[in-house]
Length: 348
Image 1 (cartoon, rainbow, N blue to C red):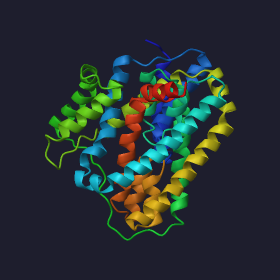
Image 2 (image 1 turned 60 degrees about the vertical axis):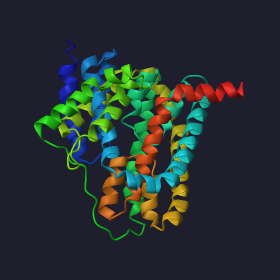
Image 3 (image 1 turned 45 degrees about the horizontal axis):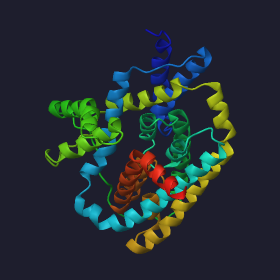
Image 4 (image 1 turned 90 degrees about the vertical axis):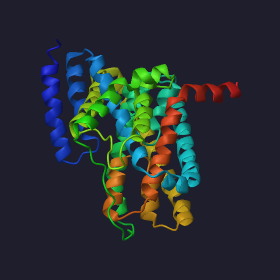
């Protein structure tokens, strides 16, 4: 047993509780990155995470990503589907272009996949496992994604205070079921989603397998039952991602990332600006407030978006457009090598 975990585990829990109390975005992931990254840097050795523990945690991430898809009525998604697809494709295409620009600016230090996954809007907790499965630099992807998440999460509450908010009822939050058989189903999906996904040849089966399985199983459950994992499983999943990313940090990676901070901040700013501009036609098409359209097109920080949406009484357009784009982001990420090969083969 690596005795360094005797420091990392309690430090991650204490920092996670502190960050959560301070309402820091992605508190448990950041706490685990800080704890494991500090120990790895001080000891100058990587801290590999148990494969079975990380595999189960990735499964819970897949379940969490799929739950919003299972509770949104299909009729609601269909209503917003055309505009949602257009808005999602524009934002994803812009972020892909930004990711390729980031790759160019790195002078070959990162791959195209790493650059694109670093800037894809939304699904920040999904990107490091996807990057790991696709052979991209998951440490660089994690650092960039959570920097974007931090920028979005901090700016959203400040900006929406200046926007007129609709008068509507609060949206119900997704509650985890404590029924024993539901808990067993969630654990089984997290554990067996990847092997099943591999048998079905689903791309990036480690994450997308549990996503597909969660959606399929949800059709067999009563409407009042969701497969949202318990908080302890959510924390375990987030901490494992932080440990994988932080435990692999070294000084060259941090120095390289620090040198690219101006460019990274600039691209994140452009992503925020483009999504804010996309909110204008969305507002006009659906005759809603800019508050709602801005939240609907915000690049990520889904938990913050939904909290502000519920607090401000926003309509179903927010969650619908966010979910449609999330599906597009996951699809693009899963097939990213094939998409990049197609694009650059055509140019050559």
